[in-house]
Length: 199
Image (cartoon, rainbow, N blue to C red; front, side, top):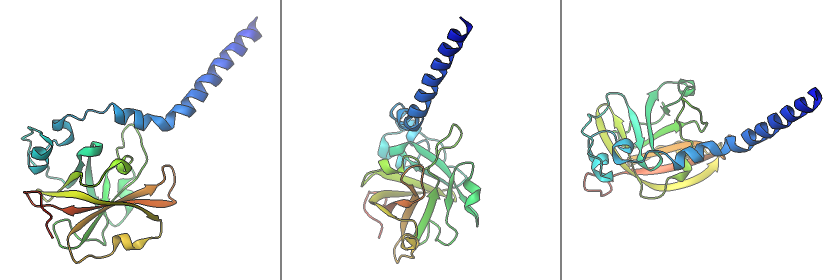
């Protein structure tokens, strides 16, 4: 009788372990489907991004540098450092070899693509579509962008960080999920307050 109970217990453990292994990769997408996408949550700071998505937020622009992408519910700090290790616990990294978002040229922001209970990253960056809006809050200024291009490049495609004669924002992360074989790249162009390109 004791052996039968042990076998039953072991069977339940194996089934639960199998379910856990099967469901774990799906959890981020399940959570994404049920996220709070109310305007005040996806655009929490007063300004042009809030107006564009219908948010009534009047919260001041954050003092720390941040990136907010309503389409994927991302609101993360943008850190500056000489090493990517600064984002090992989350956040995004402004590449030190790229210009500030307020300057003419290519401003590059990188994020990891892992997922965890306390780490929100560029995990859902692949869900962004052309013309979606985002904002970078830099030194107390709101800088608006719209997505103009999404592409997959090889891991050694350093040209995504190349200097540019006009202002643009480049976001990238590892691709596909769970690997660093390639890079998922999002190019966004600045827009003026009236929504026209600022070139």
